[in-house]
Length: 412
Image 1: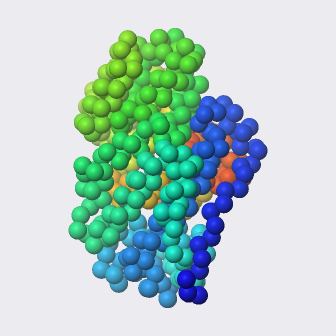
Image 2 (image 1 turned 180 degrees about the horizontal axis):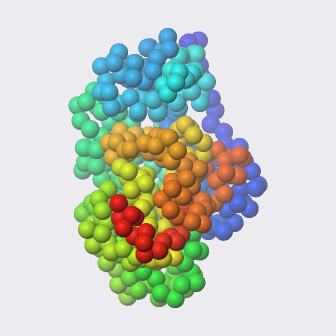
């Protein structure tokens, strides 16, 4: 390897801080374990190596002799303007390596090459990831598939939505959104446990789940309720998912697992008024969702729609992939950055300064502005990030305290 291309740094995972055990003591030990910790570190490194590989394939590295913004690079390289957000994410990954410098001028970030990045070692890292946990194949496969689409999307030949949810992509998503895939399943557990904590004392439960996908979050949710002996209190459980294929799959699998539980199924569009879609005001004790609300076109609108559908003391509990710090790139974003549904949203400087995944503070402010009380994020993301900045799973909850005079304003 020549002097212009440095050797790749070794992949070494330092032992986790002992304080993590205390922060995560309320969660199943088979979820938050050494295997998950090492897998998360591997995925972070793997996505950085994918970013290096992509920026070389896209000829971006050669353009960083001077200060360039993502918009500048899209213009120079004849990329689609919409690709600017995805390109900016790739560049932020390289800033972490020290290969690229960044500076800000107003709202625009500019990038400059400090030294050539190393040659990616993707096959070696994949082997390490599979040795840590063979189930990591689901996440690695989806990362590889998404990365392979970046050049196509950059040129405007096809959209990310067309490819990622095409015939090949759907099977990869099914494998990824699976409770056997621990790097994703952790998102389901943090939400399910917080939801059970908030409503475990109620004698009857009417539940609405939003954006259930193929049912992995529903499966964990029901398992958590069964473990606490509160499953028989469910009077109504309406599971909604707009994608008919995912909805049918989830319905089939959950019906087999819980034959005595009456489950209802339907479709719900986050971005349209819920009451005209069959969700009556004040109908549910709990509204639950995992990795759904961040794709709402208008986040405040969707949160208010959820609040309107809750009883006077009902809870909204959502599991969300969280960014520990503002502008911190995290590996799951590589899979979503080229999806228009992920990036084509209304931003807000206080609650949603960027599309995609948000910080715990952004969610707290969003829930509060939507009128929720007793807003909380679990586990203690603020404490955890100080000792481990690659912890991305969290759940946010808020309680409705609405009176009848508020209902009309909430529907809007």
